[in-house]
Image 1: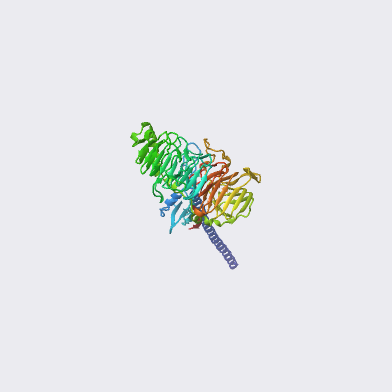
Image 2: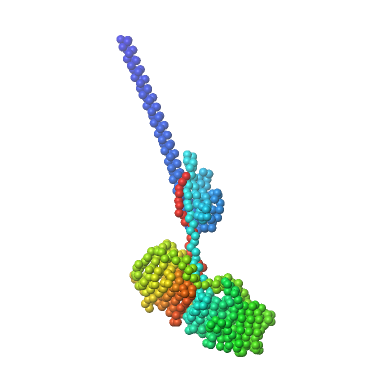
Length: 638
């Protein structure tokens, strides 16, 4: 019995020990599971924080890079500034965040918080940038951005972004139309009866032989420059100085009583025998119809103006004079000049020697003074003004450039613009044709009737190559959104273009009124077509640059007449047998500048020219600043 009882007790003890072992095993497993869970949790949290850091780094880095690139493209950071920064490639530029300010009373700019982590500039949390030149002759620039945000200490990597700024040089301003008008070449002849140049800026320049206003009603308000021979017809009135520039400048004398008349108080004559661009020698002022030096008699050329200045000029007459107050009273004879003349008619002249020689027969009504102090006190300011203006003209680079500006040769123009012949061909010859800027287009030629070709320049400059003779009848080439871009219209060699149409000025297309011709200024509808001569109204759109440039490659004719509008700079190349003709006549509505060997202004209504700035000179509408750099490569790395 006792043995049985002892056995049962032993069994109960074994059961209790087994349960303890099981409990201990469960506890151990639980510890392992809990420890593993905690380890996994901590590891996941660490990975989460690291991933979050990296995501925030990427976000902060991207935002910072975009802000800098945008600032460069909008020129808040100018091209010159970014170039200067690239001179220090090893210097980091720290990028800090903006701070927001409370609107509460007493708030300051320093009590806000940075708007993005990583821009605070705190230790271990920062964003900076290196600016490095690419080198190797390239003007490209590399931007290296770096952002590091350390929260857990487990991630020591920094997020980096490489941005390549590709340099695109600014489009060169075409070297055309330096003057309001440039026409002729040595040996050419132009008869220009109906020209009205308004505005006193720039110059009107005539090369070769030119006859002005054989009809009547021509007016030139800016300085007129002759480098060849002029035959002035009755009817032209000048409202500014007339400048004979260089040794070939001269007057053709004849028997028609022709003359050059400057409105009283508006200007004088300046005979400047300067040597320039290979032109050497002195002016021999008078020549016959064959170009030979002549000594005019009584029937010569009359000069009417406020005064005259002679530099390296020979003025030789036999029985003819510039008479008294009705002519040109005050003369200043500068160095290198020889004045030989008779004073046969009444009126007389007041002549001041300023280093030149003067011979006058019959001085009873003419007065010659050896120096300024010998002249009557009341006349001295007049002489001094003439001398001062002459000294300015002889040293003025603007006048030198104006006189030196000649018509481009066909070869020169083809080298610059011949490549424009490639482009998307426009086959439509009427109706509405809409195209985007930033592209090249081509017209094969033919008749374009009752339509509008509209090119939106908001996407960049555009070109239009005209490959064959073209007639535009009641047709408009119009550019829009042209504040900072141009449309270049290139006429192939030998191509003639005519803008013609119905007598009415406005036509309709799709219910919209439009003008015929080339429209390239924003406020064309504000144009006042009446002659601005003699009024304070010069021109409603004066000061704005036309957005159209017409380039002729040689042997071209550009013809626009009544009912046509032309807003353009027109440069028709070609000299000699390749010479081109610009024909703007019969009340064409023209705003721009032009240059060609041959000019036709018609014999009906005046060609009215408001002052137009030269290319790149300025615009009444401010243009947005643009950068020559464009971000083209984005490369994220660690």
